[in-house]
Amino acid sequence: MDESPVVIRLPLRRANAYLVIDERPILVDTGFPGDYPLLKARLSAHRIRPSDLSLVVITHAHFDHTGNLPSLTREADVSIACHANAARNLRDGTSAVVRPRTLLGRAVRPLISLAPKPQPLVPDIVIERETSLRPFGIRGRLLPTLGHTDGCLSLLLDGGSAIVGDLVMNGLLRTKAAHIPLFVHDRAAWERSLRGLLNREVRRFYTGHGGPFDREEIEGLL
Ligand SMILES: [Zn+2]
Image (cartoon, helix red, strand yellow):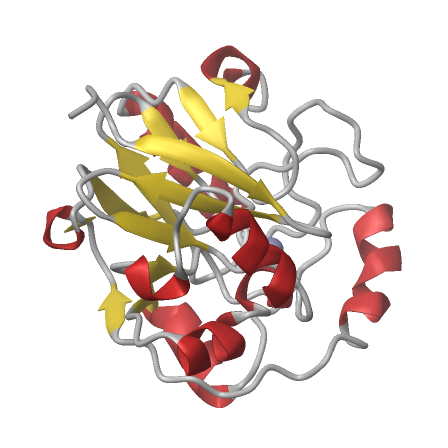
């Protein structure tokens, strides 16, 4: 086996999903509603069917990350893992609260309320503390990394990579640099989460929008 799990970015229309391949494959996030055929095609390009996945991790309960969970779980009997607060959103069919950090965020927020209401779902695995992914065939761990919302998770993979959802993102106009997210629920928690990942020697950050970003660029955000 390789030294560390393989991370494959699956670019979808407005967000990235990730395929992580180790002993078994898992999926991280599912993209914007309506992207299911594209998501399946991206998986299939790597010879993965939805039924091959040992787990789907949802980094946080925003519709551009959870949008295709209903289609996926209809087609395959796959477990869903998310943070306890995101689990509450999934069960209620709601999205995590967005708190704009900038004027641009304020301008974008009304558009978000136009998104289709998520279909309620019951997650199988609810995460409140650091949890090993070994039972799912992945050398790595899930870590709560709050800040963008009150229910965010990151995947910390052996070998120095992390998939961090929207803890960091590119610019809204698809600029390539790393930015503090447009929506920050709790700025102090956000800083703690990012420092926590840097303290664990993460070298490469895979993000929900744009990226990936190297450690040096992420250090510049603090
Ligand atoms: Zn988000």
